[in-house]
Image (cartoon, rainbow, N blue to C red; front, side):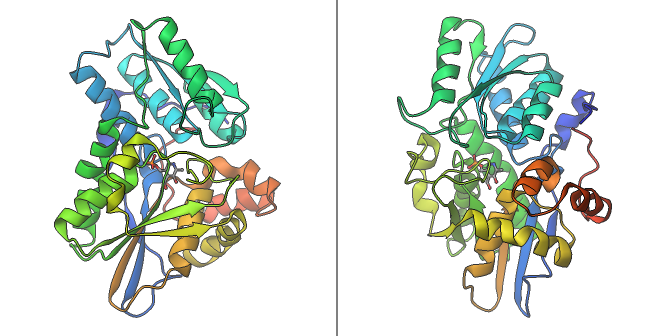
Length: 333
Ligand SMILES: Cc1ncc(COP(=O)(O)O)c(C=O)c1O
């Protein structure tokens, strides 16, 4: 994959304002389902929002100094891409600590965007809690070696991560659905997406149902966490009461819908979007529902995983890329 890095600071103005697309495959009568396509952010995922807001916050607090500070973060992928892409444009070096199970495409994009990458032998999503996680331990240890230079935004506790959704994604969804949203679905990594959107949407209408998607243990959904095998992040714990319900989803259920969504909705979706779709599909909603699911990134980074999992051969994937709808035209890989 060749890098065609997005080359100037204007791109930062493009964080957010992602499209909301109707899912014809799930919508029926007066039950309407939408996908919020976060792959349209400049570096391809929902995490551009958190990265942008955390860097801005670090600068406003005087912690981050352009040309001097190094940003270091443990991440299973999208935050690494987002931080590296955005930080580079602003004049920061970035070091990313990533579990080796993250997709090769993800690691390659991070390297191509210019970060130094450390791989650890962790499970896919860094676990929170002392002694349980190599990537968080390594990032913390590197950062503490030169505290004047290194800054770890720590997405698992950083309020700016919540704010990116409370002030960005939530209001966008409210506007895009003309205040009609009744159900909101997302997976949980740090909890920024679910708590930021949940808090905002419930302020607008306390009846909106906020539904968290829980992957199986030892899952393959990059960016998500299962709360039986990993502690809840501080950011999530602060506002976990916004969650009304949870739906569990297995790897098999998620991977099984990738082709279906491509055939019916012409979207080339990522594993986490497939997991959200599978949850929306099996959750019973009443008539007159307006359901929104966060599709945190698109399928482009997952060619190798889909081939490994026998979802699509590499040739089928290349063919799908030619006709997929609603892929952003931003070239970040
Ligand atoms: C790929 C991916 N990353 C991250 C997240 C969750 O983000 P957060 O860290 O805000 O909980 C999601 C949620 O759907 C996701 O699908």
